[in-house]
Image (tube, rainbow, N blue to C red; front, side, top):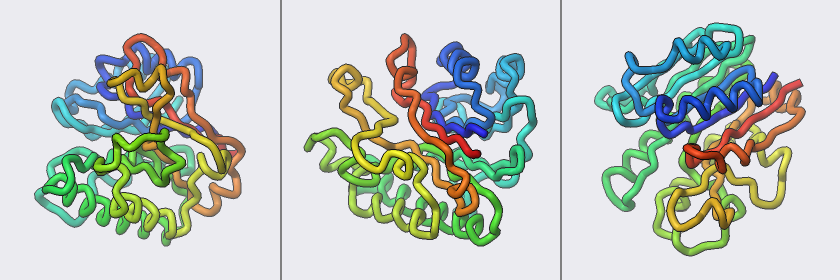
Length: 256
């Protein structure tokens, strides 16, 4: 089983690139982030023609998450995170697909920091941590997939000082991410590639793609039973270099 996460950065504008990649990579399950479309505008029919059922949690112009399943219909198990009734941002959806629980999460960026957006990021991560604890304790096979908007360590970003004040690399952001991992989850990319750079995001600015000046923001965390089945993990880096590409590339795992 192949499970991927892909921040598509506008699902309708990049639909040809998405369908192209689905045809090439043939993932069984895909978590999408940054749909940037209202629910009624989600391209469900086009994705069905490509062979994928879907659930989605959209928002006009901003955010939005979805889960796709090849030849199947995901069964929604959760939408949004508990703990803040005033949070109207579409950042979390969860589904049962082919015997596995999969999330699609899009954590807040948190910039500028310090400030209200950074406070929201940290509070949202605390709410996420509460949900991931519930999932871990359930004993179910779970993949936490999505754009966590956290660079876990200095090894996950190119050599630079330009991000020193960015919310993505702050100690509080990293502590939030590691607090989730420390519940017992396995970081699949690092489990398969323990050293060296493995990037999933390259900003459009300052020739960062051509310089391979990337960051690892997109993660797949596995429950214990799925970690034992981890056969491979990687990033489809070439997708980022295509015309009209997202600034992210798909990250994926293969489970035996």
